[in-house]
Length: 307
Image 1 (cartoon, rainbow, N blue to C red):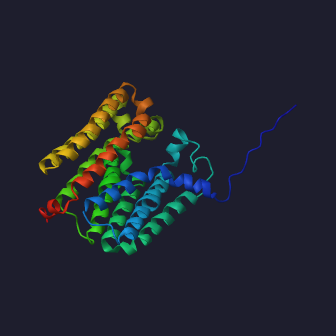
Image 2 (tube, one colour):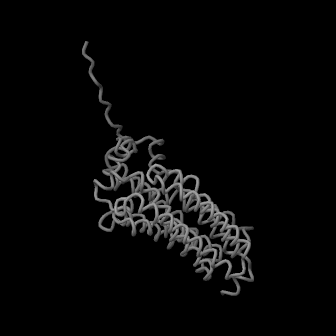
Image 3 (cartoon, helix red, strand yellow):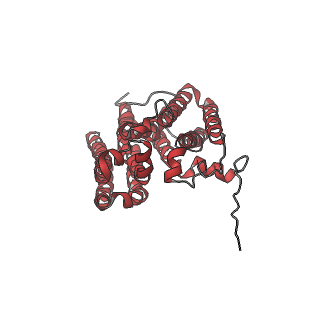
């Protein structure tokens, strides 16, 4: 008996579930968390500002971050066909040019939603969107180099989101030095978090010429760099908090850092196999430290000393 295989044609348009998968809700948390850290670090009461806070969280996560995911998936469709063929675009669940159309639409929607935040908010969103397109799209395509690409993501996901949250709460002003320093240091540390995500795509990156750190340095070399960058950033934050007379906050972050260091030692014994493990279980300690640091600098006397 002869059995014939039936090839199902690709849909003419994507369904909502495929679009949601493309926008990757699981990735929205970091910039939303950083934005919230920024609003807290500003030291401004939230009474009467909850609508602004909610709008900022909506923009940083479901809009700006989601649009960056669509942009990345479109320009990475050939790499994903090797690493993750079940992703919406290479699998055909999002057919034709729909992936690009969704990326453009979500980018425009993000800018439009930022209008109520004023010039400061719109400018920050525009910068984040430029970084997201520059990260994935030619001719810049920052992600072709793991050093540059991961730094670009860290700056936008952590630093820019933090500064935006603080600046909006301060009445559309550039935050004071302690807030800017924390945002900058945690941005650099996020470079290591981004490297953890690169371990799952080593084969496709190597074949497509994407020079991620695991490709450039090897698995163990990249694991060492990722761990060192994350730990060093937190050590710098601890030093800053001690200098600013916040010893208990520094002690709390130090304890979280020690836990991460122990986990990183296990990670380095099998980097590719345990990268997602460290990302899922270790990174929450890192971002918890961000919130502790935000509360550390929010007191009015301290911020006034830097105005």
